[in-house]
Image 1 (cartoon, rainbow, N blue to C red):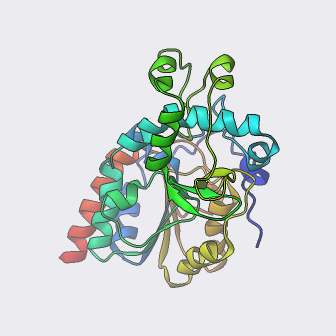
Image 2 (tube, one colour):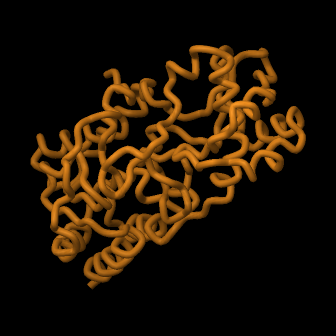
Length: 302
């Protein structure tokens, strides 16, 4: 099973969002109340925590695209650029906190209404919100892995090492940052990137990479298979805040459709899975999900 992010990143999208809006809110809440919902979340659930997504509400890509694995491995200059931008942007991720949508997912789980939670996000906010057994199929940004020896270390420890190697860098360039990247990095001037010193693995002097699945990189086979297996026992698939443009997410919708499992999609703007959706709600997750979760948990306890 080769799940390649870059190959499906540019997948065609509908030109216009469905006009369903909030018309299907009741059906969405009822679907949740039935229980055994498998939740699949994307970047849209974390925008309320200050973390940008990859697409605007019209479904179009934002101007800046994320680092691909091929670019990252192509040269030390690309690695320098990634770590320089990530070093400045790390504070945004480190200080991000769960929003009401993350908390609603945790409430649904505690009420016994979920068959599982899978996320495409790398921000760790579902775990921070109190959700258990989250399948983080694309990894976590707060992990760092050495591509040579395989050692996994913390992003916090790397931040200290990068700060020691580049004293004052973050403060000097922050005022010149031109845009925040959806992956948490900051667009920097070329001259600032050129003077940044990135570091190697403490154990073997090897190449360090963020502990996430970059675009174009394979999702680890066992991790992905375990997450997809959750569809087998689910009564519904609930997609929250994802355009499903990446194949690793869209395949959950295809699996559900093949099994006759109802699919609900709650997202701002169009998604690649809209044709398979039984319920489609175009709304702000931070507003609609807590309301739906509250109604669903009350109905389940009645």
